Length: 413
Image (cartoon, rainbow, N blue to C red; front, side):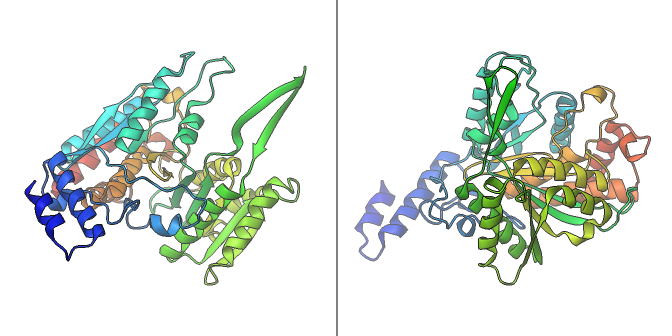
């Protein structure tokens, strides 16, 4: 009450400053944390949640049709973040166990709310609870979630999750590792993928028996959001070129709209070179000369294909992480979204992709030092100690890799 009397009694303070002061007081009372640990909103409707190489939200979302956040408070108590964890199927649960072990031994201030989703369930109750948890916590780390039900009313849970949370962009940054055998060295490409529409709209029907139609949805609004994100990402990271991947020579309306939107967006960034490439030629060019690409932007299905091809160029599914962003929420996972059921429980799965996803999550949450420690430990394990799992032509077990990473992290503290 003392604060309220002093603030409203001052004639020199603007309404904006009064608003910010009240937010600071309320947040400190809620979290019982000192002022420097509070997540304050600098302006109404503005949220600085993306760090370092990620695109500034205010710049990204200046388009009037883009959705804007409501400044929701995130689950943070006493300086610790609460994160939703979806282990998924296959190797997901054991990889999440490694993440928890690394975080525990490294003293990382993150608590996990684990939500199990039954892949054989014929209802969406588990999925609804998972989405509610992510909306409450704001951040999620996940494995690939299988959907084994044959009921046509049960859609892919991975797709539903991305659509419900409006995670419109998926980003993977593919970089070569020095001591990992691959056909191409010094690869460094960013793939920006549309995440909620295209062929993944899940709009199918059988109008005539034996004839199934599947609808591909491309909208100008989401194409604009994606194109702006790609160019801002290139601009903020010193990248020189953005390449749009499409099939507009065949799908003239849908992919034509996407390509036209990217071309129009490129006019706002004269310092960044723009070109485009047809998806089939793109796959051949990736295999033969990946160094010609810098930032690649593409619709949903092409992104799935390109992500798997380019990850294969630098060592396979076990190395690269993926980031999914919307206006309000962020979800982190391995880039190729593989289940790995055939090697589940064998202690041979490569844990690096999931640990890289956890480092991306820490960067997003602002725990930059802990993020740096995990990435440094991963780099030393792969490049200096050369502890590699079978997918990298090594003989180490998953637990060997994790224990070596923990050993490095402990020495940094």
